[in-house]
Length: 137
Image (cartoon, rainbow, N blue to C red; front, top):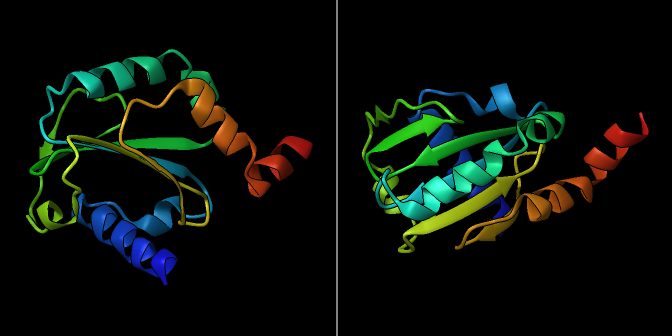
């Protein structure tokens, strides 16, 4: 049941930002980073860490979205875009920083409320059954 709620949550978020989850499902893993403010120091640190291994992120089919309560951006782009639908504010946790890792199947694989290392992200993804199959092929 929790998985179903989260899947609905992810569909809702992706539709809010003008993306279609079907575009990502079975093609990309998602790293959703939520912050209170786009100038959040932890967000900047997180994105700097991720930028250190763009090739590894690409190999792991990881697409990154950053969210504030009113704006979003994709990946390492500098431009933030406003939400047309403010319902996202009801979905965000009370934490000032939260990272969610979504698998190719659209299910939540990991949630953390502090900076996540490249090693942890890589380890989590590399232990996923679909990633293991990708590496074998």
